[in-house]
Image (tube, rainbow, N blue to C red):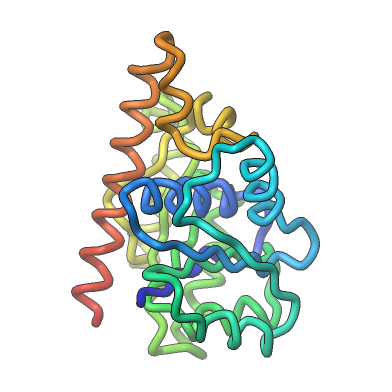
Length: 224
């Protein structure tokens, strides 16, 4: 069983949507996926699973549970009915975030490519390196618009990554309208592709997420 956490000390970086996209794509391929929603306030992942269940779009091999305490998290991670467990935690430094990172084979730290987001990201990596040496963290540039890579803000963010030697996955996640549609109750990106006008957009989005999953798998193998 593989355990992956999605963590940041700041909210609004796109953790939950990224967690759901990866969970959905894995489940679409037949992997048994359990999402552990450890965001005590929003429970965005759990709510999405409920919406998709009601809409009849939820992949059969995808399920979710909510936890509010570290003891509940530990129990959830002992379940044997999942090949992959994804943990989504609240955007703040708390006991659940620490427990999720410690328990995981890999922690993804989604971050927008700007200096404000990067400052908090650097702090998280520095804290983890000092206090949690065994837990591998990888930064994921998230919600990158098409023109972002040519901007000074993006280049400043990249410079901070290099200067602070932050381990970063090669694939960054583009900002896409189909991700917003997926986040309502689509269940899978493939479900959106039933609209002929969305086929090309969905194909690009799926390739983006599959590329990220490939990076994650490679990283886990290298750090095992």
